[in-house]
Image 1: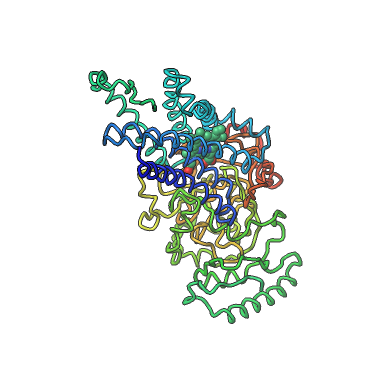
Image 2: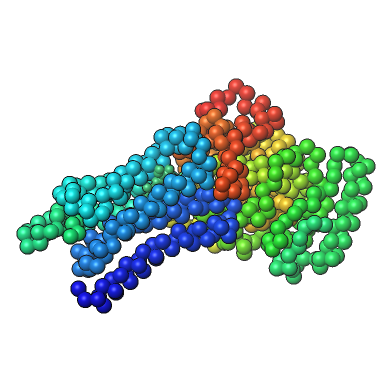
Length: 216
Length: 335
Ligand code: HEM
């Protein structure tokens, strides 16, 4: 690969990397300048949760986008998107435990085990952990086919996260509705594409049934 | 006067500040004298510190005058540290103006609160529709500091100005059939955009209710102001209910109807999610909301590294005044 192309790719990588980090930086800035209103704790938890789900949905959109528009470029950044989801979700839990619960272990344990919405969130985060750990290229190589089966967990995680916000709805269900419709489409598209592509798969051996492609 | 007036108030309708201050001081001093003669426990309105740069809500002239003549209630003065004015007027659940806590402060600014009509109907000898000014006319405003505990497990401490609900209700002479009082918020989707929303589960207009003995309890209060100022629209201007031993959603805002009924009113949240919100909605640390604990609460504003989490008290600390109302009732069932 020539040097110019490599530099451009580096640049794009850094751009996406810093863009993805921006919400966290803005949040930090607002927290320091006490610009988060009467309940900064809740504000931070909600904001981090929102970005966790956004990155999860984005990483799930990579495959449909490729199939729909033929864009292959985003595939290169899917790992980053997934890791950012993990990053924001982890901070989301840490913010919850620190700012809202004050690390009162009794209350924290109660929340994480008794509240259905928190339970599913917790399970989602637990399930995300092995995916984050095995996201490296060497892990991909080492786990081979198992890597793919393992990373199919992401569909279960997405459904759990959707449940996590559906069970929080008090009156306004628009957020849950939009994320739900989007997820439905992201998953349904894969299913829909699976059948007709069954024949074509012979010519594209790298595509597996769910449309994921192992990065080489 | 310690209140820091701000020049950004729509000043066209209010009195020039110096005259206003003089007048206020005059009224206060005369009041202090009469109050001292009448009863030694009544003192003039507290001088609150309002943060610099905060928007004040002048309200109509007649209300300003009433506010200036208001007196401190000798007894109902929660000793807790006050929630700053800034937070009280910027962190609100008022779904008619949006679901985010910051929405009401942004979107209710042009809400018309004067003229305002209140309709009294149902099981009363003297039904009628009143202009708010006439509705309030016979009463002197008082200031009370109450804790407010939201069902979402956060709480504030707010100095309200208003009138005891019982005094008002008695004026209309409820009949023996009047077992409950039902309150209704204004229904006006033009001004309250979420009343037209497709994405909410609530039925509009918002309805709340009290049992007659609850309504007659001395704690029950109708507020027209806070922090010595007229009530901002986002806090339920021009008239809202304050029942400090109950979860905040019972404190219905921008009231236009008061109806005395024989049957228990269907309050909005109870209709939407009966398993989560009851009619009584008394603050009760022993009965959790199905989705979160009610044992503790975060007192706002909460600092990031001190969540300000405190134990929730039965009846929000007002058990002495109200517990007797619920004798013999299973409060794990009557949520
Ligand atoms: C241990 C795990 C988790 C805990 C304890 C937790 C806790 C919470 C809490 C307390 C809230 C605020 C609820 C409220 O409105 O009162 C929340 C909201 C949210 N969480 Fe989580 N969460 C967890 C995991 C996750 C994960 C893994 C994701 C996504 C990948 C996520 C995404 C969200 C979203 C999108 C919201 C709503 C934000 C909004 O309404 O603006 N959470 N979570």
